[in-house]
Length: 543
Image 1 (tube, rainbow, N blue to C red):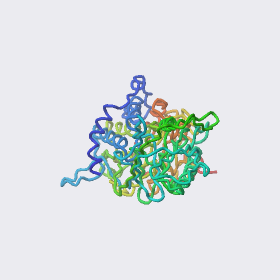
Image 2 (cartoon, rainbow, N blue to C red):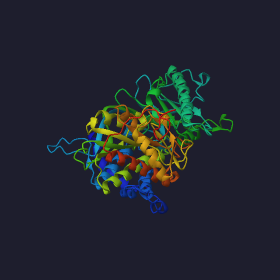
Image 3 (cartoon, one colour):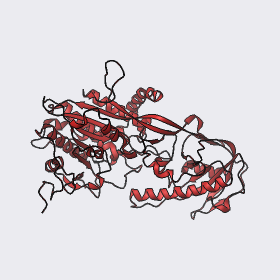
């Protein structure tokens, strides 16, 4: 933990210097006028500021912001610096110093499984690959491979392709996939299950290798079919597998597929070089041919999987204290998750622009509006969490270890994906949950529906996402919530979710709606109330 903390100032400095910059036409775009009756400070929420933050969060330099990585920590520090610049008070961990000064960062403990960089890599001929692969540790617990030997090609890993036994220095190589998967308009969850099935096939190959005394198996994924699922169950250089309490997130699904020996899933670039090393070619139909036996099949493979029982992941949290002596002890929480999926096996970055650079940017702009405007009566907490993609971990930790009295948290306004037009919510729409069809529909959502009209926004029912983002952990504590989300689209959890595709006018309108909704809760004499299922957004009784 200490080793990781030392890196933070360097990461922050480098990320600020190297951050991607939004185009001038976005940075200088004229915002919409604020609606009649809106707080004047709403003008501080504009598409130029949203673009500035979104291009930073979604930059390649932050590496996809996978929880617990350097890129996610850089994002946490960027948010902390923004809060500090606004004069917001830190509401994270208490210092061990006598003055008890708080940090903007709140740490929560996880277990970490990771590849040790200095002991990991592949070499053959003039090529050295420190990355470009993922490792799935074997069921037998073998975590360290150090082989200076020869490549042994076993085709597609069928029984008939296997030798009678592998030697001590053999490096078994099989082709897992030779063609890209045709996805078309296949939903992301279906794509994931297709990749998961490929893992099952890979495990079968690994079992056959183990039966022939092999130490591990190198699987060539030329079609890149496993690239999008390896971030859940594989250990990549610089990208760990994490576990929080009894939860392993999506990685738990891969535990059942653990092979008898470790599997090294190799991306297209290195796979092609391995084929060249073996003088192998693949035709359009996927048939493999060898031009001539290679003279040199020597190679080195090293990887070491280590486990750390105590590793800190990070939320960022700050507060603007309210102005009313009777209400300032109560607080409204604005939340958004800063984390995403990290980097793919082939080195491409899951930039996570809509999911959730859009929501993180909104959180920063909303904080600016509150900080630079009239003080609200109730206090306002700004919470950027990590671990959302792994199972809502950061918000779960905050809700169970709140740095503000839980019974004084009166509402949560959560923002996750607000920058795209989708089948669920078009250019002039946004989905929210709990909707009027939901048993947890509240006065917050009712009032937000009315305010949305001022922005020319229609609301759609987003109840299928009720348990899928960070508001859920507050709702489970009995706290009224509202969640803004545009819905899934073709770039959801893909490396194509980039900042240039965001609709910054839509982001501006939804961010302002979220701000105004939270502002009304801050100013109201009474706390928000649950209304239950109703007939429409106005809260009318069902017929």
